[in-house]
Image (cartoon, rainbow, N blue to C red; front, side):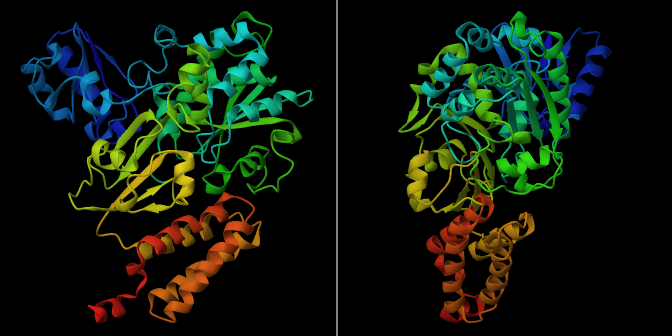
Amino acid sequence: MDIFVPQDMAAVAVGANQVADAIIAEARRRNIMVRVIRNGSRGMFWLEPLVEIATPAGRVGYADVRAEDVPSLFDAGFAEGKPCGNHLGLVENIPYFAKQTRFVFKRAGLIDPLSLDDYRAHGGWRGLENALSAGPSAIVAAVKASGLRGRGGAGFPTGIKWETVARAEAAQKYIVCNADEGDSGTFADRLIMEADPFALIEGMVIAGIGVGATRGYIYLRSEYPFAITMMNRAIALARTAGMLGSSINGSHHAFELEVRVGAGAYVCGEETALLDSLEGKRGQVRAKPPLPAIKGLFGQPTVINNTISLASVPFILAEGASAFADVGYGRSRGTMPVQLAGNIRHGGLFEAAFGLTLGALVDEIGGGTQTGRPVRAVQAGGPLGAYFPPSMFDTPYDYEAFAKCDGLIGHGGLVVFDDSVDMARMARFAMAFCAHESCGKCTPCRIGAVRGVETFDKLLAGIDVSQNLALIEDLCETMKFGSLCALGGFTPYPVLSAMRHFPEDFVPAPLRHAAE
């Protein structure tokens, strides 16, 4: 009998390890033969720990299982999948899960993350095998035809980046995975690395074959110790299986891969600062050109892609470019793992084709706020993303639609706030965040964010309100167009959107009360 208990950190944080130990101990006490499999999370975090029982009809789920509940659950027939406790029925039929289109996360929560047999049994390595048969130029052509765009923020076409590196002449080329997931409300990178690490490895190997790179690095944030452990173990297993090394799957292609751990600097999520950090330098933004595709890591042509971008590649090569390109909205093709966080009832990962409205994601999928109060704002795209009020909830989840609203898809995070939020304080936070995280290389970011905090403090104190509001807008324009990278360049998005959509919060409290 197989019982699945997630080892994803979201589940561990609410007691999954203790639940797994309790199940093993109780089964032993009752002389029941069970195999406890530590899978990854399905991404329905409000149900964790989500325990699943393998039955002839499928996997039956039990939500919010606690270690102290385990004996009574066994008494009630839990081990046979009978209704008891927080019984959910078949996991695949849970509405939140059934509504998804899972391309990238199709194995997440389904398999033992470190089982090569499980990975292959659920379609793993088919993309790599097809890539080896097709050859480098066909690999790049497939990625271009799929319409895959960077899932880390900018939305740049992945195939064009690969084509540039493939055409570059160099003795050594690199594949770099940007797994420095630092945006508030995001966890897709962590979840894929903890639930399906071989998918990222397979994607990076395919990228290496496609562009002629023989070495890769996963730049992984130090705040993810379990993901670091999982990736290192998965790399060792893949190497033993012949999927890494001097002869990939018996071919003449070589590819080596290793994990490098960052030190927690947000700016190292920017690709050129990441490269400096990988080279052992202080993480600072580089001026472009030259682009990393021409002169990247150690001065060599380098593909830098986000974790989810690379983990999307095995599906494209296994199922064909059209299978990916045929879903989506406008120029945003394929699926996006949207991460619902903040004050929301159903927090978790929801992978779906582009085109759902923002309101559908927040209200229908996410279930509205956890507090039950009205939604007042949603921040999309991390701490430097714009705030959307409910009046804009008909906006399609699409790169171009968000850009028209001065917003960002970013890494796919949505952070929800109810009507108790003070948007002036949130706008000030954006400036304070930028001031804290700036690498200091360019003046608009280094000095502008500090002056922004000072100006906000005057504004909130009721000093020269109209003049300071105008000054903040002017400062935002300077930062937007004068900063070297997105840290300074995108800080104006949350500030200006908060000022535009919630002007009443920028009237200092004493004046607000006087008006009332």
